[in-house]
Each structure stands twice: as C-alpha cells, then as structure tokens.
Length: 527
Image 1: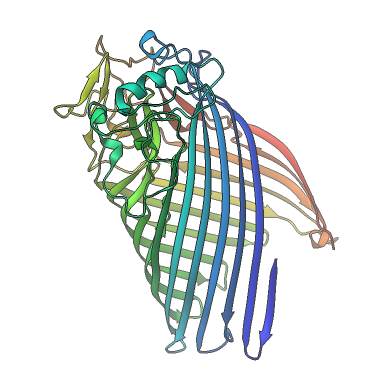
Image 2: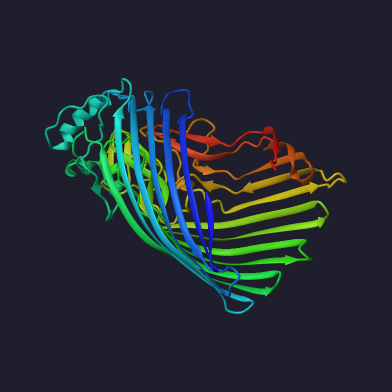
C-alpha cells in the first residue's frame, strides 16, 4: 500500500506491505530408488511486515534529496523430516538410526535509516551520493528431533554420556537431541569470530559439547553502513557515461540442519562487498539502436557461499560458510535493434571471472577426493575422512565465465488495432562449478574409499556442463491490449542439461533442467 502526501514542495511517501508464504514439499535428495537421503516432508512459513517512510524534495530541482526510515519484522518456520535407512548412517554402531527431523524458528527485525543526494553540477554532469545505516537482530530456535522409529534419541543418550560431561535425564523420541551447552536461553553471538565448523571431530571431546534435551537458542545482532558514490555524464542527449563505487552488506543467518552438536548450528556473519562499475548507455539512429555496456569489479569479504561441514554422526552436511576473501570481475553488454516496423532483435552477453582468494574448509566430500592433499592430523575412521583444505585460487560456485542470449520478435499491427506476434529466444551459458572446489574434485577410486565412480559417470561430476536452450512463442494481442493469447514452448529442442549437483550423504544427485515444455497463456486487462 502506497500513500503520497504533498507538503508544500516536498513529498512524504509511505510504503506498507505484509506478506505470508507457506510450503509443504517433498524431495528425493539422492536421486535413487533407495532411501539414502530423502526429505519425507518439509513444511514452512514466512510472515513479514514492512513499513517505510521517506521525504523527498522537488524531483525537478538542481539538487534532489531523499531521506527516510524503514522497519521490517519477519517470522520464519521450517520443519523437515529426513529418511536415510539405506545409507551408511544405518549400521550397528549408530544403533541403526534412519529418521530425523529439524524444527527451525527465526524472529528477524531490521531497522534502517537512509538518504540519497543528486546534484546537477552542469547540464551534463551529475554527482550522486547515498548512505544507509541498518541494524539487524535475528533470534533463532533449532530443535532436532527423532523421526518415526528413528532410534536417534537412543544414540544421543549414549553420546551425551561420552561428550557431555554432565548428568542428564535420557531424552524421549520427541525431545531435541543435538548436544548443546549454550543453555536454555538465547545465547548472544554478537561478536562471533573464527570458524567453529572446521574443528576436527577428534577435538569434540574437549569442547564440552553438552547434553541432549536442550534446543539450540541464540541471537545474532549486527549493524552496518552501506554507501554509494557516483557520477553521470551526458555526452549528448543520446549518450550517457557513468561510474559508481558502492559498499553493500548481506545479513548473517542460521543454518537449517539436523546436526549432532550445536557447533554445526552457529551462524554465518554478514557479507560485505565493495563494488566498482563504469559503463555507457547510448542510442543511435533516432532510437532504432540502443547499446549498453558496463565493466565491474566486486571485492568480497566474508562472502556467504554454500559449503560443507563435517558432523560426527551424519557425515558431511550442506551449510552456508563465510569465505573470508573473494572477488568477481567482468563486463556485460546488450544491444537492441529495430531494423523495420514490428521487428525487434536484441542480444546480451556477460563475462565473469571469479576467484576465492582466501578460504580454508571442507571440500564436497568432507575431504575425500583424489586431488587435494590431506593435512596431517585429520580425522579418519572407517573410510570417513574429514580433511580441511585450502581452497584459495578456485572459482566461486555458480559463476559461469560466459552467458548470453538472443531474442527475435516480430509484431504486425492490423488496421483493427490488433496484432499477431511471433518470437524466439536462444539462451546459453558456459560450464560452472556446483561447489567450492568442484572443478578439481573427482570421485575416489581406491578400494577402501567411501565413494566410487558409477559406470559411465565422468571424473568431474561437480562441473556443470555448458548448455543452450531455445524458446519460441506465437500469439495475438487485441487492440489496446484488452486481451492476449499466446502459445509458447520452452526448450523446444529438448536439450538435456542440469542446473545443480547436490552431494547428499552417500550419493550425489544432479538437478536436471526442464525438458521441452509447451503451454498456452491467456490474459485479460480490466479497465
């Protein structure tokens, strides 16, 4: 909901929103008929309220400014039940555990104040500056519990006696089993430092991990100042040059994991990026050609990336990790040409070069691979290896070096005002890594290794091959856009490709892209 109130030459704007999202899903995480790592059910909800007030002067003034404040309140809930009775967790020493669940609740509050200033130094040159202060608080409750006939509570009653160091009442199936010494109230993690996720499991006995029966509760408070400075220069009415430097942040968060110890539930801290960008926007031939291009360099500190942690009971788990230092640089360009009435041709290209400059952590298998050299003293028991590796020099996951698209659309205006139209799109991207170090990771072949290559599977299963797809559309739009009908097809040549690779316990599964898909869309405009 938006309200604008004129106060003399000023405008007061209020923006209010409320949103609610719910989900109920199931997911086969291992890609096999065997139940190696399946999400039996995942239910969740998000409720969020946002209120913003801002005050702005006359937008036609030589000096233009905006000041304001923003408040956000969100509550999230996620409840998952996992099944894994056909993997290596299901054996005698683990009391044949086969089910576990995890309940995660978060209460998030963000308060921010901001300002923006633009100054037309001349008719051609404009200077820009902006700043924002944000205070974020996140309170979490994580309760990992036993699933139906899972035996997890029995196992953790034993582990509590080994690692806890305190007398405790044995937990029932519905109780939280994670070993926890944080206490019953929210622990303050305002000054989190270091990375507890890379502590060797052999050291767990010295950590005082606590006993089962106490849900993990913690609160994370962070603040930051983001800013932006830039300039625009109009070479002429059709050509604009610009340059910007900015700093931004991404708030920290807690993982949604069913973990053996509270050390796996600690949050990632906020991510910081300093970005530099320069570009051009140019029109030619009386607007028949539009060309845009920009080059950029992004310097990250503590970038949040999907990584791994090693759990003594559940093995290698997915989680977000902080990469201390990384960078991305590249360029992007697009062009649109209208050579004749009704015909529009456009194309876009992006080039990325990403690199992790400083990061030590677990690789995809928790260290079980053929290429990285294990460090001395790593945990190794019954074929499970938990090596901590230096990942400096590898590219960031999901950053293809090249990506691009071409669009061709033709629209013929009829005397009645209606217009039939036809078009197609070609989209392509080069290969990318599905995980930190994924380009260099192969499946171990040794007879005592936990993982082996299946027949016909390549040596680098965590590199996502490049691919290209073609979409097409054909339709008719009535006069003044009153209604429109369109027949469309996506990936019409049925290209096989995959978009992600998920290592889950004993297996790795590719998430394939959609096959050839066809449909009809009908739209109607109410006036």
